[in-house]
Each structure stands twice: as structure tokens, then as C-alpha cells.
Length: 487
Ligand SMILES: *[C@@H]1O[C@H](CO)[C@@H](O)[C@H](O)[C@H]1NC(C)=O
Ligand SMILES: *[C@@H]1O[C@H](CO)[C@@H](O)[C@H](O)[C@H]1NC(C)=O
Image 1 (cartoon, rainbow, N blue to C red):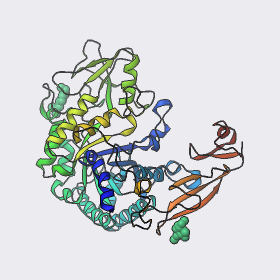
Image 2: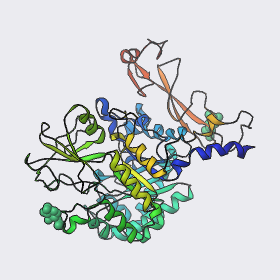
Image 3: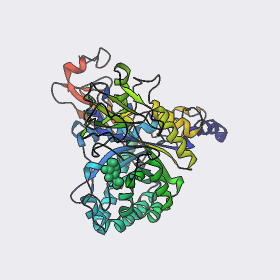
Image 4: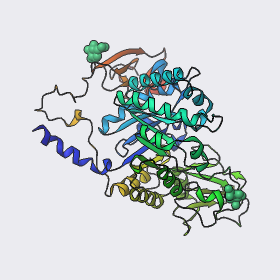
């Protein structure tokens, strides 16, 4: 009887589970302005199989470190982003929520020091597992950029293998996953990674097949071309997706553990001349920054496609390449290589033809997540999921809570924890009748919630929409329903 009830749920999730869709989230997008602002709840948990929170860092003593405690934790009126992120699993029972440690800004020396010392490795591993468990994560994503590079040591080649093997053992003992984001450049892969050994420890290898060209080159090119451009010579001929994936496989990574990285942003230059607008055009400056991402040399796909809806950007589908580029002289001669729906479809098809695990994106907050350019939200991610899965997206099952047969006994081991008196989800919970305080809720080991009352400071009220205590006048401005008794 129970089995029969479960069958339709399993069938409904097939198109997603056929491949992985690894969705990185750059948590600082919460500080963006206007339509570019992106918070945890803007993630669509139904179109990803893995969501990865970027980033945690490393403390001086080699324990894992929360980089933005105000945003990530609940303490001191924090915004609880970790708990809200892992709570997205309530909308998709198959979703894995993973915490990434590292990233470009963390550099390499701290990681090099930690990996070289058994005591420090142990401190890193133990503190990581503690943090993951505390916030309900399902695993760790190692984003050391990169072993042996950027101030790392030649010993990193071997120490990274040891670190990953120890992490694998410790995480798997807890039923958690270990994944890693790795370089796609031959010049980094060769010195940094002992591929056959690392492959034994990693559940997923997220190959960062993007940033292969950018404003650090003084000529235009595609940051993530599937294949080489006809003009590529020498090492430039290896700076493409196909080369990187083939190289990882040649070095004996299993195709079935590789996720193909696809950028949801463009890399942009300032053209030196309006007469040369193709590949290898002279360009000595980064492109102007976008209103939302505010980072010279790159634009989110959402920024590019939104500007294209109102301004006359030239879009070129170069017959020599699968990916487009676009330029617009009035914006200081900006030229961007990027990916659109047709090019991500070709990349997803490629991933499937090579027997890869699926696709990965950096990053969800720059897809057309509001549906400003397309008639549906998240057009790029949905396109790759559909192409890789060979069908249209179907709804994955939510957690058993909402689908349980009313006749089924409520004491099954899979049942969700009973809510605490004031807690209905982990993280910050409002009191619907009283905005002068709220509750901090965390799952406890006996399957219930530990709740802690927090009182908002004088003159402020808890805003259930922004998850913090805000000036009473601002909160009351939200409308009569929000805090009926306090406004
Ligand atoms: C890549 O192309 C640029 C521009 O033609 C050239 O200056 C550079 O030397 C090339 N790099 C290699 C390694 O061949
Ligand atoms: C866990 O939560 C439940 C329900 O809120 C509570 O009754 C129980 O005392 C808690 N257990 C621990 C160990 O804190």
C-alpha cells in the first residue's frame, strides 16, 4: 500500500534525476540593487539537484569560517541565510544543499598551510562537519583556487589528495557528499591535480569551464567556447570547454562524476576600435560595469538580456562558434562573450553525449531569474535541464509532509519533525500576533525544534519579509496585515 503511494512521486522526478543540475549561489548578490537583488528565496529549488552556497572561508587556525555572519547566521539579528538555504529542501525532497568553502577571493596560501599539517586538516574537517550539521547541509564543496597556484606550494599536489581522502571518509561517515570545483585550464590542472587519486574521493567534479578568456587578455575572445576558434594557436587552442573536459577524462576522471560548468554571465572588454569587433579584436580595458553586478569586465546574463530588450545591442552568432557575442558602442564600446539559450542547449547536449553527470552553473543569481527577458523565469537553467533530461521539466516531490496519505501512521521514520510551539521551519520564525519579537528555530537531534525567543530592540519591529528587526515605521508601511497589533 505504502509502496504504491510512493511510486507516482518517484516517476514525477525522473527528468531531473536523469542528470545533475548543480546550481551555485553567490550569496553577496543579496547586496545588489533594484532588479538585480537576489536572496536565498529567489532560488528555484525545483530546477536544481544540488544547490551550492558560496562561500565559507578558512580562519587563521584552519577551522572553517563563516564569511558574512550577519547574512549567514541567525545570531545578533542576523539573516539566517544558511538555514533559509537548507530549508529550500522542503520544496524538493531530492535536493542536496551543499556549502562551498574557498573561492577566488580566499586565495591559496591558507589552504596550502592547512592541507600540509595533519592537525590542521583535522581541525578543518571537524569544524566543517560541525557547521554543516548545525545548519542542515548535505555536504561540502571544496573550492580551493588552486592547489600549487597563486601562492600555494608544490607539495599541494600530494596534500590535496590526502585532504580529499580524509574529508571523503569523514563526510561519508555522516552520510554527506564531497564535491569540488576545479580548474579547466591545462596550465593549472597539470601542477595542481592528481586526477586519478582525487577522482576516488569526489562525488562530483564541477569543472569550471568558463573564465577561459577575459579582460586580462588584451584581445576579445569567448570565455567559454565549446570548441577552439579557427584563429587559435599554441596554448590558446586548449582554452575551450571540449579540451578541458576531454583532458579531465583523459587523466582518468570518470565522465559520470563530472558536471560541465556553464557561465550565466558574460566576460566583457572595451573595444579599442569600432572597426574591429570580432574575435582577437584589440581591447585593452575591461568592459564597463553593469548596474546590478557592478563589476567591470563582466555582466550577468540578466543584465545583458535586459539591456538588449531596450537598446540596440548587436548580437553575433559567429558561424565558427556555438556561442554568441554582443557589443554596444554607446556603452563605451563594450563587447561581451556570453551564453544564451541556444548555446547552453548545445553544451547540455555535449555533456549528455560525453556521458557526463550533468551540468553546473555559476551562478543562479544572474540567470533571467525574474523572467524579464523570457516568458518564463530561469530560462537558461531550465533549457539545460530539458536538453540534458530529454523532456520538459516536471515538478519534483516536496518533502513527505505535504503529500502524506492521511491514513498513513504518522510515526514513520521519514516523517518530518513536528513543529515546535512557535517554529514551523528552521531559521527565523515570526510570531503572527506579535512583531516585537520572533523565534530562532533550529532542528534538534530528537527531531523537533529548539526555539529561542529574540526580542527586537526598542523602536523596531520584526519584519517577516526581510527577516530582521526594522524601524517600526518601515515595518508598518508594509500594510495592515503584517503586524496588526503593533502598528
Ligand atoms: C594567444 O593569442 C594571443 C593573441 O594572438 C597571443 O598574443 C598569445 O601569444 C597567444 N598565446 C599563446 C600561448 O599562444
Ligand atoms: C527537541 O524539540 C522538541 C520539540 O520542540 C522538544 O520537545 C525537545 O525537548 C527537544 N529536544 C532537545 C534534546 O532539545
